[in-house]
Image (tube, rainbow, N blue to C red; front, side, top):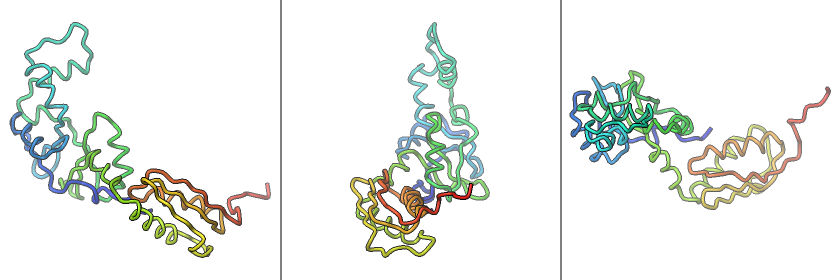
Length: 224
């Protein structure tokens, strides 16, 4: 598969704070990093993450001075308790969500689909922090020009063919706003289906319109 990995899009050497960092230091770190979250690190290992959401509860409940509404949810009660936090340790969500740099961006997107998880700490084999990946980092793949996407699509389709096929000239690739259209004919049905799979993993591809045809249906099961 040609899918990009986390190490290609992550922020390297991200701004981080210690567990003892004050509330104001954490808020300033978020502003300096221009990101939605900062890792809380102890001895190089991330132990938690503080997000903008965690900091903003201080404004919502004015440092915990405000009383809870008469009809308050359990989530609101948790936010009010956090509004009194004075250090990163009290603010952070723990344990820290982590991922490896060689994980696919699809795997990262699956983890970040949880609204309560604003970022993932990228760690090495010793669990030490080496980067941070956010939803915005993943969105960067969609900046890729159509011409660049088309060039890579041609390469991966040709490279991924597992059996002798027709000439490259019989394959047409068009990319419009990230949507890939494949036209032409291959020998086997399995090649046609696999082409759509590998193309969907190319960085910047929004969708695949697979109009390829085939000569032989090698996926048709007979004899039963």
